[in-house]
Length: 169
Image 1 (cartoon, one colour):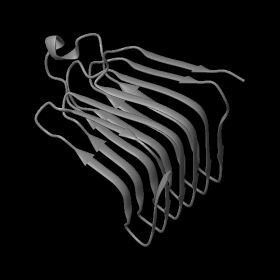
Image 2 (cartoon, rainbow, N blue to C red; image 1 turned 30 degrees about the horizontal axis):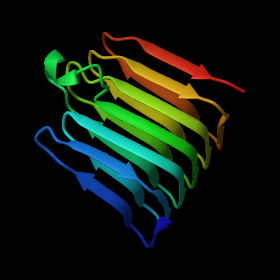
Image 3 (cartoon, rainbow, N blue to C red; image 1 turned 120 degrees about the horizontal axis):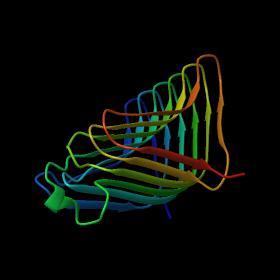
């Protein structure tokens, strides 16, 4: 089963449960068009995406955009604020982004597990991860490949946590 869209600024799946709920997306998604987003998830305290395949074709398109906001340590409960488990992610287009994960809370850890990720296009980014005072963990069992002038494979930043990257292959 697959969700697909075709058109400028089209979205495959938008899942929001603001105010501390849990969002989980279990679907393969494809988009075609500039400024398109295949999956957008914002669950407040916990946001989770579990997907086999995500593919985008278009400039400024994003495969997975995920947000989380965990303000207290008690809310974490040994679970990351943002969790992504993805098989294959592919984007084609200038400034396209494979994964854009941002946690705005003090304790909002980000955990990303993926098979492989490829981007093709000038200025494209494979993984863009931002956490304030929390940890970022990225584990890839396959390749992370970018192609294009000014392209970036992994861009991870936090101001006080740990960043752990493991790309095997």
